Length: 598
Image 1: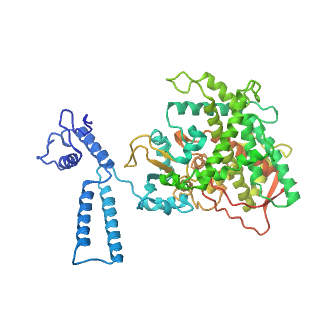
Image 2: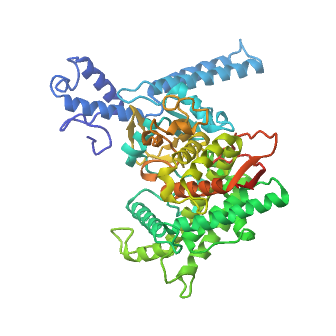
Image 3: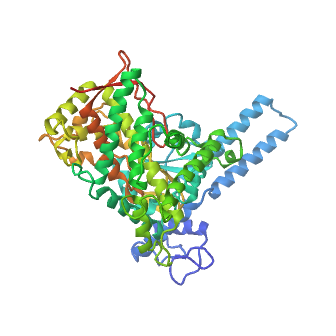
């Protein structure tokens, strides 16, 4: 327990023990020396008190950044250097001086590193040595997810590094990630304070920056409930099983015709913009009850911001970790602020329209915004406050669902087109499965999914192999945590390396190969245990709220396109699947051709 003065008591009724004395106290107790000031407390007499004392000492030492021994060595080296440099007998050249200073600096850092590892009970987290000011930021390179995976092979699945002035703990491996985010989910449920994330939704984003508390939990439950209600409601088209399926059918039909027309008119073309607009229209219909034309300039400019957003809101943004860079000219960060202002304005206009007496679809709940507003009037976000959901919270929720929804699904779908063009034999196998299951006069439905195992396996292998969300949005510890024998202080930034978990050789055989068959069992059905090993949407408290809806959309869009079209690369062109790193990784731009299947 703690003394009122802030020092630590070894037991009830005893005098306070200082931090240095406490270390000596524990050593004496372990050795069972009779000269100890607390002879009564030993392993044989009361092990529980001993354990508490040992834990207390471990926490104290874990928080001590510069142990006493380090400072003694430092002054020794400084005094010796001073004596040498002021000596009349000896004066080094400039080169020698630099060499000596560099040696002294490395000696200091080595002593500090060594002293940090001398802790009882709780071990220091291993990791690469950080450079002053910049830390390990230059070691991450252009592919941080791969570099961090290589570091995991060297330092273990839990290791630490320093990016700028901020210490970061990196979690790798499926079991480690599951233990942190699910079993100890409350400990890792916070978001770190990062400048780029603070700007998203004006600091009101449920996904990026809102603190983990009772209000956040209620907010997320409302959003998920509204999303499920709208997507599962009965469709106007009797051929569709639900409203979500109807929206996807409508946009997929339009996309099929557009791909055929553009190929006939221009030959091979880059389909990325049209795929993105089609997917964004499904999200828009779900959220706002409206769609936009493919030549709507404002809508195209909004959905075209995804790539820039993904780059800034990732570990590539040095200004998040080196604060001084926020005050220096930064064109990318300034552009990011402009994009977020335009995006927020677009969302707010569409949300506020639902509050007007004659607003769009005001009288029905066929879109998430109206449903969320209606639920919010009946539910209090904060149990201790008599208030419902504000307009700002509705707008921030719509912003989260729209931004994350269209970016994740459109990125998955555009990646799928490249994989299908690169592996035509897999494309043909999926088409045969669809033809054998679905009548060519109808589009595939969600109810056909159990009968299309290879199609679903392709989707999961796409998620795993591309791992286009290589790391989750950074997490943060909510309190001091002991995890896997390591002490992690409160408010420590935590990276979750999903790419490593999806390419871990201890889990996946030949992870570098693209093999949908790895998800099919001996009975020709999906192996659900293997399916659950794929990470894309995060885990635990901060798991993506729209994951189920996103998976449905990707499956439906992909099945419809493959039923109707052949997808081909330009003759002789080899498709490079190397991605560009970001919060969601984008592929290189390619021109593809589409032709109708007879």
